[in-house]
Image 1 (cartoon, rainbow, N blue to C red):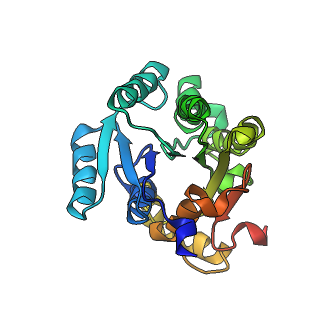
Image 2 (cartoon, rainbow, N blue to C red; image 1 turned 120 degrees about the vertical axis):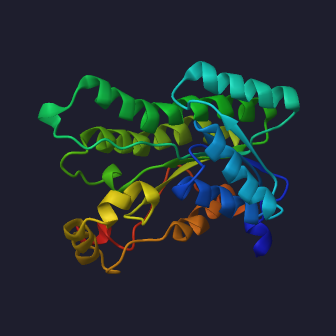
Amino acid sequence: MSSLFDLHGRTALITGSTRGLGFSYAQGLAEAGAAVILNGTDAGRLDEAVGRLLASDHQACGFVFDVADEASVEAMFATLDRQGVQVDIVINNAGIQHRQPLLELPLTNWQRVLDVNLTSAFIVGRAAARRMVARGSGGKIINIGSLTSEAARATVAPYTAAKGGIKMLTKAMAAEWAEHGIQCNAIGPGYIHTEMNAALTSNAEFDAWVKASNPTRRWGRPDELIGTAVYLSSRASDYVSGQIIYVDGGWLATL
């Protein structure tokens, strides 16, 4: 049974992986045997994250590039091509948040959130899939959705639109690439206690709402997403494609 989830001999690219959920995904896949490629825009933070994995005897390296910039993404993949590195697994995790009422929201803020949270998954996923198709050996593309892929909340409209788009982009990828042995799925994290959510977890009113609205009566932990990430990256999910798996403690089940 363990061989179904074994990632030895596979290479995974995880965007936005210097901290938070992205680093948890990278750490989990590394522990399952994969060589991992981390990404971020802060070189110092990226080096620190890679160092943490190397200190645990994992195979890891990092690239600084902007996931929303097509030329930057293509340059990174071209470097991997020259090095003979084949990416077998992609986790499109990079994302940002911007909270502001729609009536006050500037177009630039709307566009930036969509670029980083949605368009980047298309750019990175397409670059990886082109190489997977050319090799003929398949692969795994995992996009990161959200509870807002299903349910909206006030003041986060760009994020909601982007994560709703992630759900349908994942289905579109699956529809086009499944015949090439590429499985495309998504993970929809619930309310997870991360550095990105520090302002929310420290807000007594919001913290109480999260706990009251979730059947588990608590926030999720980053490590509770690792199993789903490994499953969708492994041979165990070879006939699973176009799905979004919510890891939310049952939050959506109560809507």
